[in-house]
Image 1 (cartoon, rainbow, N blue to C red):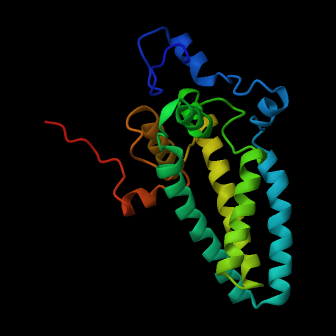
Image 2: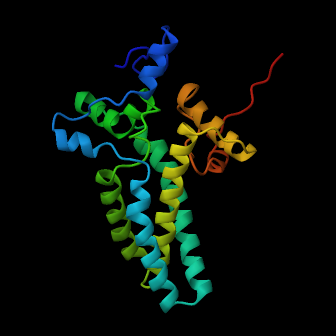
Image 3: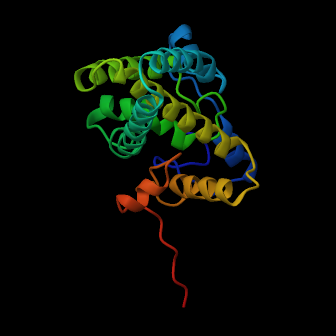
Length: 221
């Protein structure tokens, strides 16, 4: 466990420097050097990988469908992503699997981020993780949506995923100046440092109000 933090990832008494170092640390997760290297990724990598895919899907979709139908498909894909982001974060990322192996799995999936939330190389999904998830989304999408409508759905889904990854990196490593940016950052910091059972919508914080997991202002006497 990182110095200055307990098993839940919350700060314990210690020097400010020790806490800051723990927050930004990038611990080794795997004994295998290649696997450990693949667990880290620069924030720009998802953009380099998935923006061309979105462009190709958009080009093909607009070529074979009307603009209105394609825009509807993109909107559908984005809505599917927002629900995936919220419920994935709430139930998959924060599920405490039983046993030592379960604890290890939980730490690899999301626990490490709560212990070292400012690790600059583990704030966006590595392709090692996002790639299989996107392939799974494609497989499920083929079962639900007909082609070519599926192209727009996938484009919207990928765009939503990128908005999540970029928002997540931004609120950890930037200083927002707008009211919206400061609000999104504040809500995510509350998730990290006050109550991890609330605030699951990173790029879609309004879903926490829909599903009753939003932070409420504390009343003062």
